[in-house]
Length: 398
Image (cartoon, rainbow, N blue to C red; front, side, top):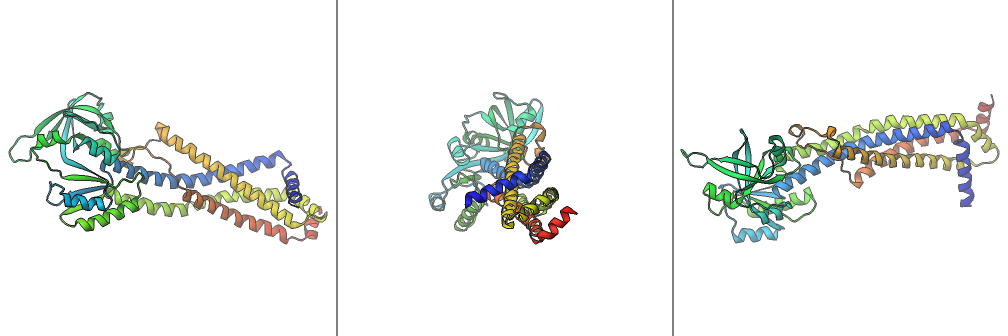
């Protein structure tokens, strides 16, 4: 019985798709529907990719959380260290952070200098730091703008911290450049050895910033935020603890809100594309109504046509989803490799964007597309089902 049913469906397919023009119309319908789905997926993916890239870039420069003290410079005693470890802190990187001017080839610019220890900083951020005394790591954007190369000489002009004293010059050799993926970080951050910076500033064995890592390989905002909140309550004053992406929290929240709104608004694109599907069905019905009613008159049950129509619509939806997936991959490849698709980092924070989609995004977009297809197909099939055999034959043979 199942074999007979499938054979009948294949026979109907040969009857309804016996012309090359029908296949061309089907192909263009699928591509149009797929393109509309790809537009929605790319929009959602760009927002997710923006948030993920921004958080990952902030994590590369600041770990999972940033600890400061209301009194300025501080030390972490054993009791505080034990409390941090109890609440999931896996690594701590002491940092002396200060502002300075960088001088190179007659140009100057304000930068944020971070004095770091190699092992601790590598453990917290996951990046490789191999700084020796007298060496500096420069942000990639700054290096490109100023054409700074490895082994070039630069100078940092630091405030002495004492009224009336002259600024201090810190000559350094460029070790290499570093990329966080964030324009602001790559154009303003430089790294030097912690001990060298302490000696230059005359600071004892203290820090004014501590970068914390919870050891999470993936940036899970909710998990990190929960751990930060719990640890903040335990530490209390005078400690100040905040997530690494706190400075961009407003922007990230706006992106999440816009993502939901745009996903709903862009359903209009799917509605426009569904009209193409409707045009295809109407054309198919107009061309093959006579064959349908003749087959019905010869004894073909209408429920077989219902099964056939559902199979056509499901295949159209499935192929549209497949082409949409390929369109998304192609667009993401262009974003990552085409120079003409790069965006100005000083305007959009990031210099490169990427499409990052989760399974739930595909499920939402493809599920809504299937829902529209079911609604449209239901109306068309219901109209055919309600037309009597005599009316259909009379209409075709008039």
